[in-house]
Amino acid sequence: MMHRKKVPLGSSKTSSSRTTVGASSTRMRRKKKKSRFSKTVDYIVMGFVMVIFGAFMYEFGVLHAENVADGTASVKNGSGKAGAINKVKGVIKAASKNLRRNISAHKSSGSGSGVVNLDDNLYRSDLSHLQPPVPYLPIFASIPNDKQLIQDTLDGTKPTIAGIVALLQKFLSELHDKNMMLSQKRADGDEIIDAFFTLAKEHLLPFDKAYRGRPIFPIREDESIFLSLAAFREHLLADTLAFAFDNAKHPDKLFVGAVVQNCFGKVLPDGTIDPSGTPCKTGAQVVGKNKQGRDMTKVSDAPIDKNGIEDFCNDPKYEKYCKAGQVRAVYVHETESLGPAMARYYASKLWGGETYFVQTDSHLKFAEEWDEKYRIEVKAAKNYPKAILSSYPPGFTPGSGTSVHESNGAKLCFCETNVLDPNPIIRINAGGNYKGGEKRPTQIPFVAAGFFFARAEFLVDMPFDPLIPWCFMGEEIALSLRSWTSGWSIYAPRKNLIAHQYRPGRMGLPKFWGSVGRLYGRPQMNNKIQGKVIKRLKNLAGYPDATVESIQKDNIAYVLTDMEYYGVGKERTLEQYMEFAGIHVDKENNALACKAIPWCGKGLKE
Image (cartoon, rainbow, N blue to C red; front, top):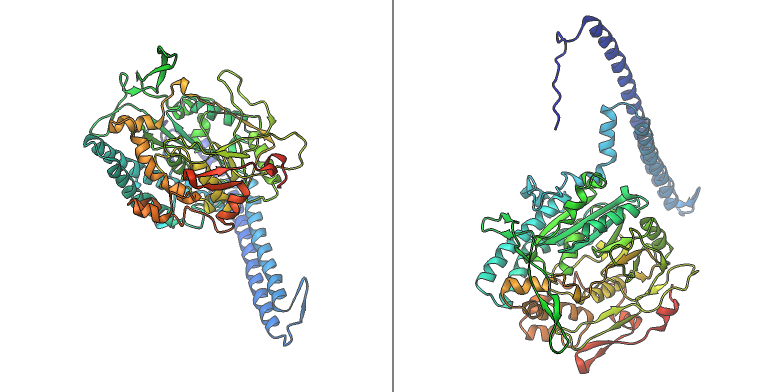
């Protein structure tokens, strides 16, 4: 940082002639500044006079309307009391608008520095929650005054992004300490689940309760986009960020909330991290074939994971976005990575008032002007503003270019259940594409967790559930039925504007359930824990083996905690959704079964 040396007024370094000129210039600047200040005051006084006049008119109109015995006195654009009230309400609204316009015009004229800065702060007070800025680097950076920021956020009156990140960091830090203790004592699944739910009830549920039924921050009507990214040991995160910003029409309106779940190194007892050597593990990599011709796999030691935020933000081309506060990050140790649903819960809390909320995977490419095209597409949906765009994007392979070739969009029209899965739950699938030339997007019954685009009011009606850790399958049927029963309609975008790197097991990439197994010294531990927690999702979807009675009988009633807030919506019923989506109960297999829904592929519902 450069420090400028101050030169006192009247210093011997300033000549007499320069002092004289300087004094003259100072008087002129003061006069000009005073003129600008007076002009600003004039604008403000004029605006307030209009507001006071409007208030007077309001009272006069009300009294006049009340004095009309038969209630039929005529007022322009209305009649009686209601007409008078509406009339003067319009005057007040116009006065307020005129005041805002005058101040805005004064700002844009470049007048003054002192007064305009004050106006700027007033005018942009809706962005105060973005201060203090949250450090995106280094990893696990402490946040000054974190206790007060957390308390202000939990009080529900002065939330900030910094307070939210501090709250999440506190929760994750305590979870890490608890996990280390449980792993050392070789705790059983019930102890592990109980520890998580206890901490969630202490930290996460009070946070959600404070903002129930309202957005955490005011929603800005500036067409901004928040991109939610959950990244588990992701080597393409930096590329995904670069593709998103490079191909956006308005990169200055793109904001990212990334949850980076990495192996950062060996965590020492004092909490510091040793990144040296090969402290991490790969996924199950194919190393050959056995005598039966089947793949043989091996897990090997590995260096620490790439930090995509560090790579992106240290790139001179992109650092401006990070420094401008457009990249927000929460870091999570691999040992606290509890599946995509939890990571997406954390990411959703990094939303800062942007107009649109977009959730995607962290290994994507984007078409040119994808942001503007999705804005236009969602507005074309018949149920907008309560419209969701969602799809399974086509795949790509590394090295295939930096943008996406647009193609006709696919529709999520099918679902299925594999009863042979350890914890079988319904899965959704694509089926059919647009032909081209359709006037507007058409409805589908399912939301893909790897991509959806909606207005930010979605977060109010559909708060992410913080109580489904360790679950991999099930989040999509939960998103689908919760959003639809909350009055949101789901649409397939007519064009594919993103592409996804699909990852078969042969790639040998690490999985979160592998981390859970290593932590507790039992490879199948995640399946064991998930088998209980997933009953929460099954109860939501109406599975016959997940009724309230059966869950209570199994002594796992904790999985139903706060279901009324993360469950079926109030605009449509679960039964209506099941009929809409072609889903019925399969009692023989304790599962849900799917049937064909011809209206979806044919685009019959707008």
